[in-house]
Length: 151
Image (cartoon, rainbow, N blue to C red; front, side, top):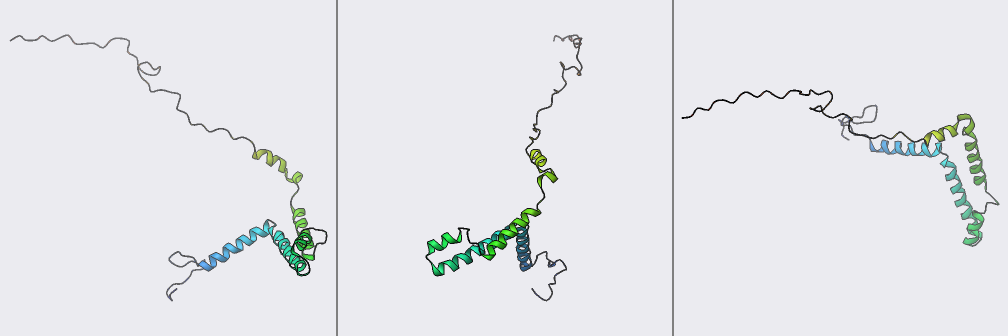
């Protein structure tokens, strides 16, 4: 950026280009917020707990046995307990189906929509045989033939 280029309050330069660092930070923050809102953060905590447990077990026993003990679930570590408690708390905060009538919404989401069909109009162009068109009852008058001069 030169000294003449200044950013406005929204972070855009006068030419309409946004700051790439600010854009990347915004996208990363949005993704993190989405993960937290969907409860995926507790899955990340569980993965960290498994990695920590596997690392600790693999220091004192063979890898196969460390892997078995890590995913056995009989002796959870402190992080596993925290992750499970967080998942349960997030599940308890969700609204109940009976309170919101979620089953009604489920049924409504599967109702068939009315078919949308494009067809040609039912009317035809008016003509001699059409009801609304004019119909000649008499024949068209023909003028009498002209006399041809013989030369």
